[in-house]
Image (tube, rainbow, N blue to C red):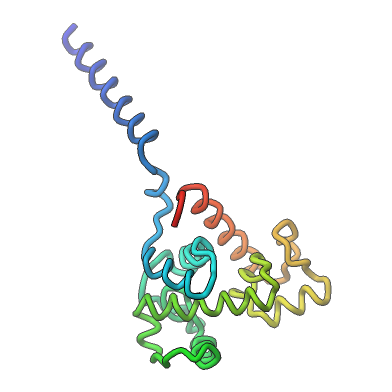
Amino acid sequence: MRIFHKKRLLLLLFITFVSLLFFNSNWMSWFYPIHYKEEIRMQAEEYHVDPYLIASIIRVETNFKVGKESKSGALGIMQLMPDTAKWAMEKAKLPEVDMENIKHETLNNIGIGTWYLSWLSKQFSGNQIAVIAAYNAGPGNVKTWIEEKVWDGKYESTKDIPFGETRHYVQRVVYYYNQYTDVYDEF
């Protein structure tokens, strides 16, 4: 009889704990963490870019792991190609930063990547889906697809994106964007 009461008490305590955890905290943030929030927030404000978009791109590119270098040579947390990073620093009149710093320093990498997202947003008249695709495939490719009516730049027609990698990339970024905006009340 005593064992039955202990099990019941433990079950009741467990249910109470889980209920409190579920209803009184943002437990989903454990599954969808956002690291470097302050750096993202600062750059998002500076360049007028949605911080959830920045976080979603970082999540897909590197899962917030610093110091990454892709097989194609993309660097750092936002996976910037060296030529794109140099071009962005020049175009934005940002202080020039060496490639090792871009690879390992989150603030510089997020700053350059966010400026680039801002620039892409202007190129695509604020079409966030086209911006995501252009971040992956390059703005020239995306402009060509839209101009030649291969793809209309909308999420619903992502299947029409000619590059499989970019199709998947857009879907993943949008997935994380939706998760972050659902999980976090504010950035």
